[in-house]
Image (cartoon, rainbow, N blue to C red; front, side, top):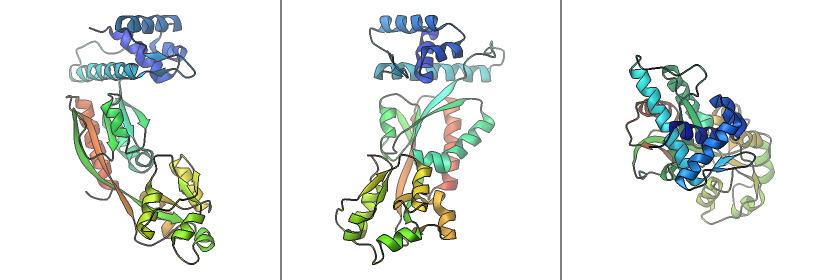
Length: 300
C-alpha cells in the first residue's frame, strides 16, 4: 500500500512545479517534501520527478500523480456522501480531476461545461492542453481521467461519448482576400498567400486547401499557438486560417471576416473519453461536458 503523504508530495511537486510551492500547499517544509519524494522514489526504484525549473513528472511519476489525484477525489467523494467522516482541514489541498482538452474546445465551449460543473461540485479541474488528435494519448498513458478528443475508438479502459463536431471556416479579412485572392482561390494563389498555423499538429489549412484545388499545396505559414491570437491575426490581415465558427460568427456577420469560399466548412468530430472506473464526480463532469457540447457543437 502506498503512503498517502508520499503520493501527495509527488503530485504536489508535479502540479506546482517546485518543491517550495508544493511545501506551501502541503503546509510542510521544502525539506520534508523532498524527503517524501525521495523515499517514494527509493521504494519504487524509479525517478518520479525531474528536478528543474519547473520540476516535472517522469512518465512513471505522471501515473503516480494520476493515482494520487484519483485517491484524493475518491476520499473527497466519500466525505461528501458521509458527512460524519472527518472533514479536510481548511488548509488541505483540494481534490482535482486531471483532464485533457484541445485549445479550440477550451476557447469555445468547454468553459461552459466547467461553469455548470462548478455550480454543483467543489472538485477542481486540472486541465492539460493538447491537440484533439493527441489528447487520447494522455488517456492511454494514464496521465488523465478524461479527455476531449477526435479519436473515435475507445481507449482501453475508457468509455466514449460522441459530442458533436466543431465547425471550422476558412476565413480572412476582406482586405487580405482582395490582395491575395483577387482572381479567386487557386493552387498558385494559395502557394503565395500567408496562412495561419496553430502548431505542427495543425493540418486543417492543408486539408481545406486540398479539398479546394484537389492537390497538395505547400502553404506559407505564420505559426500562432493561440486560439484568440489566431482570430486576431485573421482580423488584422496577417493571414488566412481555419477558425472555429463559434469564435468568428460575430465577425462574419459584421463583415470584419469573410469566408474564402462560402459554405465550405471542415467539421472535426469530437468525443469525450473517460475512465471506466466508478468515480461519481467524474460522472457528474461527464454530464456537464455532454450538455455544454450539445449546445455549442454541430450535432452528431
